[in-house]
Image (tube, rainbow, N blue to C red; front, top):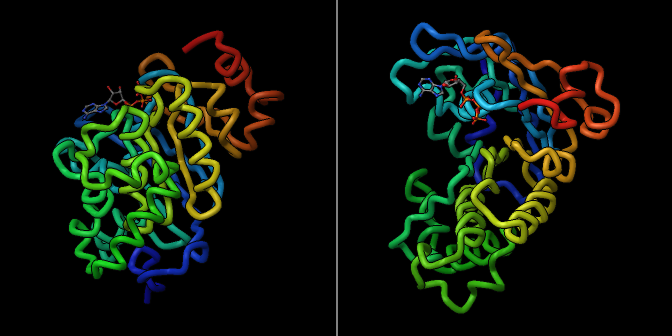
Length: 274
Ligand SMILES: Nc1ncnc2c1ncn2[C@@H]1O[C@H](COP(=O)(O)OP(=O)(O)OP(=O)(O)O)[C@@H](O)[C@H]1O
């Protein structure tokens, strides 16, 4: 008998749901082509884990596997396990909606629904997950998610304005607020600042550091300073000479940046390739 699925837990009080995510021996293919080879990584509860590595080494694929988005690509296959607090996300009993609810995703390019109002954007995920809420509860949720995403003071007077009218950095924080509204236990972020200016990047980074107290975060980033600034643990992916991506080294971010064990990590974090 499986334990209760973490993704199925109803409304938990804010901080009670810190979850560990563990990938075990993940391999991935697109058609015949293998792009990840037996990648294992523990992403600690309430921490920020950064996935770094040169372009094409499989970071985004790995991230998408963590919330079952990889299976949406028709030619895609995978092997291995993803455990959310010990429960396999790919177990047939773990519903896809529960997986998405438990593990949210913020993409590289801010993707709010442009014609929907700011508050409708925040609440959009409730419809998708079939969650019911009354008016007062919705108002409270909109305020709390926008506050936690660091956007409330900037938009509190125009909640009915279209989400598409916000700046890029504000739109990205709106997307973070939208993800938070379904109370995820893990938030995946795929290069969330790559389309943003340095000021907006800073604001998102501060938001991430605040959020890490209540949600486990995994971020893909090409920005080494960003990985060093925000993450507690770090994993260096590499796919050399057409071989599938592997994790060369992972561990405490400070150690990875200051005393890496592998010469290739040392070269990468010091900008000598990639
Ligand atoms: N939908 C897809 N169909 C076929 N191949 C794909 C698909 N998505 C990714 N790939 C291939 O899988 C490999 C890993 O890609 P992935 O996007 O995971 O790498 P990445 O490390 O995130 O790269 P980047 O840093 O450039 O975003 C690449 O060789 C890529 O071409």
